[in-house]
Image 1 (cartoon, rainbow, N blue to C red):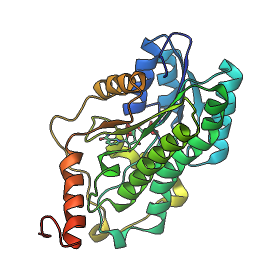
Image 2 (image 1 turned 60 degrees about the horizontal axis):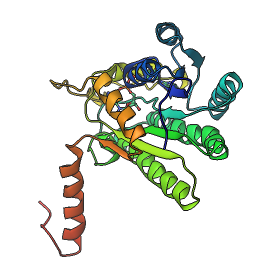
Image 3 (image 1 turned 90 degrees about the vertical axis):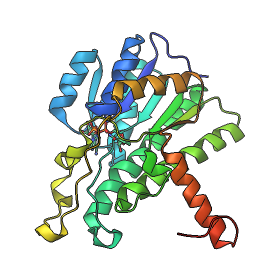
Image 4 (image 1 turned 45 degrees about the vertical axis):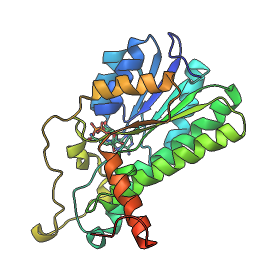
Amino acid sequence: MTTLEPGGVAVVTGGASGIGLALGRAFAARGMHVVLADIEAGPLERAAAELGATGSITDVSRRADVDRLAALTLEQFGRVDVVCNNAGVSIGSLPTWQYDQRDWEWVLGVNLMGVIHGVAAFVPHLVSQGFGHVVNTSSAAGLAVIPGLSPYTVAKHGVTALSEALLLELQQQGVDVGVTIVSPGMVHTAIRGAERNRPSDLVVERDASAKPSAFPDVPDMQDPNDLAADVLAAIEANQLHVAFVGAEPMMQERISRLNASRGEGDPLP
Ligand SMILES: NC(=O)c1ccc[n+]([C@@H]2O[C@H](COP(=O)([O-])OP(=O)(O)OC[C@H]3O[C@@H](n4cnc5c(N)ncnc54)[C@H](O)[C@@H]3O)[C@@H](O)[C@H]2O)c1
């Protein structure tokens, strides 16, 4: 069981904005040492200064960057209590077959490989310490299928599956390291401007008819600080899921489709 006490160490990727910054603030408010990692230099510098945190320019899609982040954290603090693999990008809506190869590379590279890299770089240290907690940011799109958002949905399903497998493996080996999967609905952050972070070699020029449609604006988006409070409570309770309740009926629909295809349950619409 991980306790979030003064002197503990929390690492947060995508820590310069939105949910990552809110997590960083919440850990700092507990008196923890915070390491913020992000690809955007200016916002990272400002966020680290605000929190008195260590800032590390890191592209989570690159394994070497994440290994460097782990080495820096251990060199500076000698331990790591919480690792939040949170950095992520979103892409507008298109039918699956219209996404470009570079769209897949970018979204899977950050959202899925970023988490894989974080687990590979940090979990061996948590296992040898014998304590710690991994927080992986998935999405409601990691629990339920959202048509029109295939790269994002595929990446987030990967994060959910990897995190569940990770917890089962840790438990099977009797290692006292926890896992929490964060699967929010709509949160008020800068994610709609995620294209700002797309590397130039993965940019796709499209004509107007093939442009992805933007995420719709929805009222009453969740405040990232409220989500961060829920995540810290989940770490302390060693709870696997922090999930948007609206994902559940969508998951039920999937189970109905599975049953219908076996001739049981509700027929397909
Ligand atoms: N905002 C939402 O509605 C929502 C819903 C569900 C899940 N999420 C997930 O929450 C996480 C955080 O997103 P957010 O909403 O706070 O968005 P955000 O854009 O406010 O923050 C994301 C941060 O990740 C950083 N980043 C982007 N590419 C990176 C890379 N290659 N390496 C390191 N850092 C990188 C950005 O610079 C930014 O600071 C993401 O994984 C996202 O998919 C967000």
